[in-house]
Each structure stands twice: as structure tokens, then as C-alpha cells.
Image: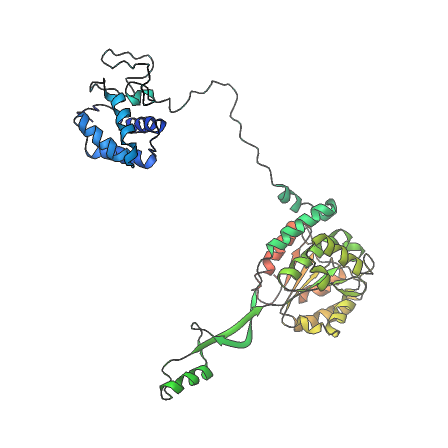
Length: 399
């Protein structure tokens, strides 16, 4: 501004300082009112005190009851102040200019100090003390759960395993669906629903004026989990039971544990408490931490009345592949399971070790019939495996 009552004055500083004095006197002048005043001063620079008064009053006062207070504050600011320039540069330290108006130290009845308001602003940025210390960045550390997720199962206690089990259950929040033979009415369907279309044509002289469409009903794809709880899987058994509980409670899965015999744990693992569910599952498996007979237990599942559960399902087997049955028996059982299941996924706790190769006889015999071989040596591996199981769109064959 080159002319007028606020010649050479910072408009934003003036508006903020005047609004601050009004707030101290009880007038609610917020940021919106300050912005209105700045815009008004830019659009119409006040040539005299009367114009400035009306610009400030219209912009800063919203209630009729605040007019008296505004008049008192405005009068206290501009009563004895001639229209002389005052800028931030002129009021800086070490600068003295006799043409600037001295600021009186007394306080008026409106609760505002005398003098021009923009001269009372505190420094925007405080000076920092000089220091020779180098700049230090905060050390980034992983969260407690993130640190536990990468540790081997044998390094975790029961409380940590239960905590990570709840994280695993929260990760299994959705499950892929499959197309069924049933259909339902849907405007987005591609197939014409004959019966509803003919039924509506009765009201239009048997002319199909309104065509009803339908589409197939989709249901969650069934999942069957088999967990090895033999002696070689002692360190991983509890964590695998938490994985089975996550799918049993979220995806309505059927879960079985096996060592030398097969034990169904579906109803046991659906308990609301994870610790209680795993404890009951451990008590239900009578041959826990014994030998391993994978081929025998796969045949037992397919021959039982639960065998149809594997038809069109995603079958997940958690085992290290050590088997006391002959490899040919396991290959025959896996071939039969392959013909019945939609996908077969094998979780091996040793698959994530560098240089791993499926040289164990049982693992080598079962591998040709698996769609995926996934590492499962840590909870992070189980989380990654759960994410892959929730997007079952693979083609046939091992990847």
C-alpha cells in the first residue's frame, strides 16, 4: 500500500494483531474474520480512518452485542495515532526512527494496551541457541509385533504366540468364493430368468415387456486344513493350531490334526478364547508329539464321512514332510486327493531356509501333486501364506 491510513503497513500483521486485541476484550474474532479483513484491505485500501473503521467492523464483528466493545478497542488503538508508516523492518531491533509513534505503556478500560496493534506482535520464530552438536535423527525400530513375527517359533513363549495368533486371525478377513449351480435374480445378470419373465408377461398379454435377468450364486470356497503335530513339528505345532483357528473362525474351515492318527478339531478351535482353544486342541490330540503317518491319515480323511469336504476345496497341509509311510503310498494318496480338491497348498517350516530342496522322500513324493509349496517357519511366513490363500486364482501346477 502506497497511500492511505495504513501506508507501508503489513496488512496481515495488522489484521491478526487487531483481532487478537478484540479476542482479549471478549469479541470472538477468529481466522475467518481475519481473512475477511485482509481481503477487504486488499480490495479497497482505506484512505482514511473512517473507511478503515467500517472495513474492520464489517469483517470482524458478527454480533450486535459486540459493537460497543469493538468501538472501544478501535478508539484505544487509533485515538492518538497519526497516519504515519510503521513496517516490520522499521520496528526491528537496532533500528530507531523519530518519525514513528511512541507506544504508551498504560492500558485502557477496554483491556487493550495503547499504541498501534501491529507493533505488539511477538516474534514469529524464536532464535535457537547455538550448538556444536551434530544433527541426530531418531532411530527407527520395528514394532513389538513386527519383531516377534520374524522370530522362529521355538524362541516365542505361549503369550507371544497367542498374541501373534490374534494378529493372524485379524489378517484372515476375507475368503475367495466359487460359482454354484444356483441362480438368483439380478439386474446385472447375463442370463434371462425364464420363470420370472413369463410370470410378469401374464400382466402384459403374454408379451415379455420386462425381461428378468439372473446370475449364479457365489459361495465361499471350502477350505480343509491338515496340521502335523508329530515330534518333528513340536516347535511349530502351536503356531499352526493358531493358523487353523483363524480359518476355522473366519472362513468356516474344517481342520484336522494328525500324527499317527487323524483328529478333527473344527468345533474345538472355534472357541472364543485363543488360549483355551489351543489348550483344548492339544488335549484332544492323544498322539501328539509322536510318529508321523501322512499317507495313512490322508487316506483316512478321504475314506471317512468327511471325505466329501475336500471336494472342490482348498486343502492346506502343514508338515515338514517327514513320513514313516512308504513314499509310494503317499504319492498314491496325494494323487487321489488331487483329483478331489480344487487346490493343494503345502506349508513347510523348512522351505524358507536358504538352499532348501525337497529331498525328503515324503516331501518329494507329495510335491508333484501340490499347487504351492510355501515357507512357514515364522509368523510372518504364516501371514504371507494366509494372504496368498485368500486369493486362490492360480493355475494348475506348482509355482
